[in-house]
Image (cartoon, rainbow, N blue to C red):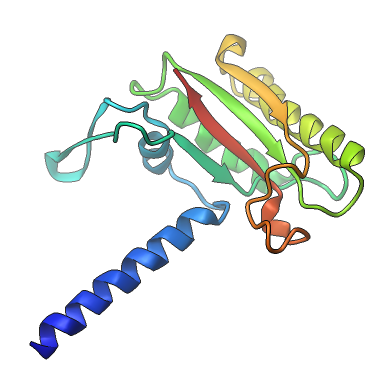
Length: 172
């Protein structure tokens, strides 16, 4: 009986940890991770050892990435360029190849509404331009939008740097 309780508690804690980890913008990505997170609902994915997984209905296909930029600018860092190389590989995967994506820039709450709005738009556009001009993703597949500080990931900590991110969402 005690063993069942312990296993149950471990399962609950692992689920809570998993949910929390999904809230954090991701700084290291793999092609497989991106394909799984961005696959439109109803798509069947072939995983390790031949296991087939189906993307869940009603769950938005999106991922928050901690894309690095130079301070107060839309200039991509070297790490950001490397991450976007992986993103481009994922967008070229058979599962995602014929889909469109929204690149949404977000900021923290430091600075004015107008400044953060402009910065988030410029950063989303910088990601889009790099994917199109440097990595060969078709222009029609990507739209760039900025949300400034209007959609904080951590509203209880508005100045937290984790609010600064680029969210990629699959458009149907």
